[in-house]
Length: 546
Image (cartoon, rainbow, N blue to C red; front, side, top):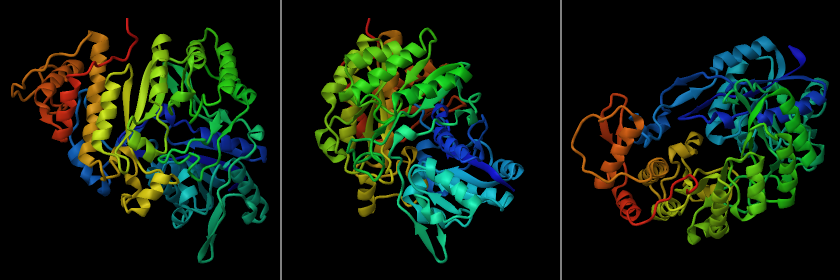
């Protein structure tokens, strides 16, 4: 065992899909920087930095999803089908750790539905290398320290932001000093637990730059250029009930980093990598206008004539967007605006504790068109107390706007007000693994069959918008002729034909890999209302009007 060796692990993911550009282990790189400062050697074992994936059986608790996802659909109306293990096998991770012989291993456990993968990683590492200490950190252990510590293989939990606490834990274990002095720590103590409060970094001026050299950027590429992530702020001053990092949650307060530190971080990356894409993973990138303008004027200058695409994929708050900001975004390298709408329903917005941003949202769309930026607009469906009719109205509203419709199925996020509400009212699913959008976690005022229907209708709507952009119009409806197989092997042609049948009889069809046509399970009432309305409203495309 090497008493100076630390390994930080990003575990595999088991789900229906993986968004590669959003799994860069940025948080582990931030923690690694502090560990280095304490004199330790540190590595990141990123289990997701591989093209490996394996189809696995649906977990038992997912059996109710089989009618929704059981058949593969090769058309534009597909949702999900195969459940996969993305990343290295647990055995491979265990062997890697054994070969490295670290004295402590830190495992990231960010998303509650993936907690089982994090625990499997811990169990396998201890099986292959029982000598090391294992610590879990991230959003899930922060809110469920006792549950995580019931796993015999987990020695410690670090709650809150782990940069300083992980470095202090490494130091304390090496020197044999009092562990209870470490902020945010939790561990087993005789027949009980010692659990301290979560810790949040107060002074961002002293935040070390992430150890980005430990990230495998050869894997995180787009169009043969490196794709990097930047987090320029943490927390959120909004009160939104569904969010686990809002001001209404127990998360740390809203804090922004110094502009010079962000620029220095990006410059260091640019010196090593040929950067082609930067995702700013912030909740509120443009909330502070003057800060935003200063930052992106520098970024614009830094990447002048280098064709770097910028994105803020978490969604921007429409009231914070004005022409100064949009024009600079365009000049800096943004090609699209990701906009957070939430809902257009005043009743639902009240439940969400969120302001009505419709007017500013429409102004943001106007500015996006003026500056030739695409748009993706996010709405939430199937939240507690939310009706399917309300979500359908949101979808039809977006149908008339120059934007893709990003319909997100609600999931209860631990730490949020809505999670507390669901827990109090016994609405939470029985398993942590079900608390994800793809599993339709609630069966409340929006039923699961209504939720999957809304999701499919959003796919159909976006395909219609695509046809308007590429062909100028939507094809006329026509009756289904009773054929067993698709007329064309071409994905777009077969999807167009399915759309024509759908507009005629309201049945959402799919085509399996054997070209056989079948009907998806869906709510007939919702579809009927959708078709009635879609025929009476002007549907807008996505691209800038000519």
